[in-house]
Image: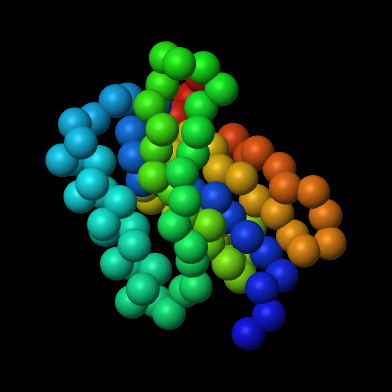
Amino acid sequence: MEFNTFSLLTAYNPASQLLSSEDNEKRQSALRSELEEGGVIFLAGDNCPDADNWPVEPALCIFALSLQDACQLGLKYGQNALVFGESDGMPHLLWISDKEE
């Protein structure tokens, strides 16, 4: 299998709303299970914030998803953004929230 794309995604704290550790762990477990059931390859990691006012969030580096599939997965788990990259280019932070501003 060729890994020509990657996405960095978490299920923690949807829409930038802090949830309990228990709720976040259930959400992350559901994301992991969905990927495992679909045979998607991923590695575990952490999203580390630039500022001290937000917690470190467990994240997944997911390989070989299309941009559309990555965005749909991010929206499903309530995320505002994700990082997407291709093997021949720079990764990009993409805002994917479907809430109206």
